[in-house]
Amino acid sequence: MIEVIPYTEDQFAEVDALWRAVFPEDPPHSHAAVAVPQKLAVQRDLFLVAVEGGHVLGTILAGYDGHRGWLYKLAVHPNARRCGIGEKLVRAAEKRLAALGCTKANLQVRSNNDEAARFWAHMGYAEEPRIAMGRHLA
Image (tube, rainbow, N blue to C red):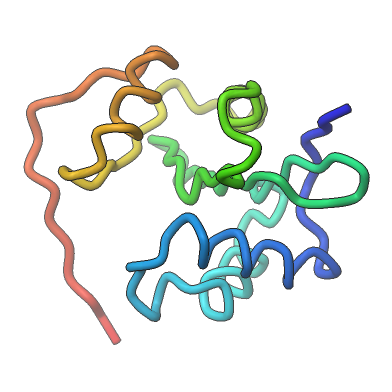
């Protein structure tokens, strides 16, 4: 049975392997070695994993700044897709965000990731007319 629970440090190796498989082109600042410690320092209870038989099959990170919520790093092991794991992770993160007073969750999808865009549309998320901008501070 698949369970969605908060991340624990003993799951690092499996999360790292999962992210490498699902996000092979991520830049170094998004790798688990950097992102996991950063997330654990801020709202660690919004880092969730889907586990079955003690093994990590999926992850989601969420954040809330008091105004808007964000969803990041939704990853499901390629051999475990289309089994409802992504939906369980998203709904669990949304529930935690709502409990904090969050009324809207945002996310970003790479423009060439049609599969992810279809998934998020299925989950009730809609494309908004925005221009995503960013700047590395380090």
